[in-house]
Length: 447
Image 1 (cartoon, rainbow, N blue to C red):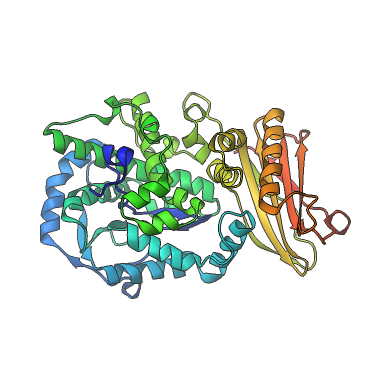
Image 2 (image 1 turned 135 degrees about the vertical axis):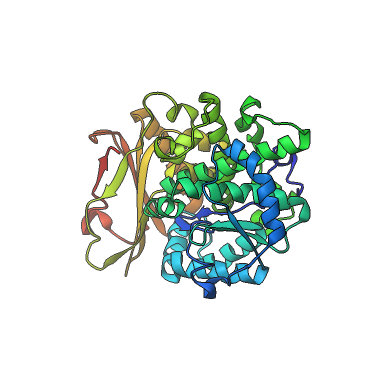
């Protein structure tokens, strides 16, 4: 294991177990993705390895016990080179995040001040994955792949993690599951946390049992949430020898790591609540990052289901919609933390989140970002609006500043049918949106 800092090392997370990742409002699926077997030009078919097959056979009984999944067919394993991985990654980017979409995602998150507008998203993602990935599972090939440069001390750990994904796919169609959520990055991140948290927890239980020489039960350990509280991911990446992870914008770093740590905490709590160890799929699949961040909003007879927010109007003449999506509570929190520089205030401002949607419009007048957030109550809406006002003032300068070239209008609407909402309109100062067109028409729907 690489040294990932006290909390990471204690709980067996090295930062090098990436399999499937949702980043910046778009899915790049290193596990559930077309590739190796069916499209060799996007990642040449790796060679089978009998030694790895023997290791898988030895690991399988304990991994089956820890994951609650018994293999229906023998899992297949193969070795892939670093060059094959890079070709494979580029293939996935071409298929799932084409250049036009990558540019749209970058533009939207740059307008939110979360990434620089010069970010080459493709290049950064490839470098992140090359640094992170030592193994992945491809459902279309029904094969788990291990890179030929993996540290021997990590080999069994990687195999245990990827074996869980292979077993998951025999019970749940991972490819269909992840692709069905591509229109909502927040729901996708929540589902990904269930997938990765399940694999990480089972891997950890196998690792602890191996170290102690006896079967262990991770549900008897203290809540992992407390162990990871306050973990600095930039410092983690630096300590673990992951310079790309340390240097990328916060939103990328958080989105990369959240499915593993957030998912680990979620599945452990699920199993503590129900000792039968239900799978975190089906009725146990979280549908928002809010449900992972707040234990009480998932557990219990009535879960806190966020609202679906959608725009009901077309862009005005001369304007095009570049991108529309939702941030979810996780990225809303990151937005506030990035601009306020205060973790506690960011948490407080975001915790009333109950659904959101943004749209980035572009026309001759420049870019307009419209962001609608539903809040749990009127007090939450007022707190959100005040924090948003300060965040934008810090981003662009005081409204009275002579050199401020953006105008941000923030309004609280407490008479919406389902929940109070906060509407943010971020537009060029020279654009008279009040007289030219209605900033936004939207509706809220229960899920």
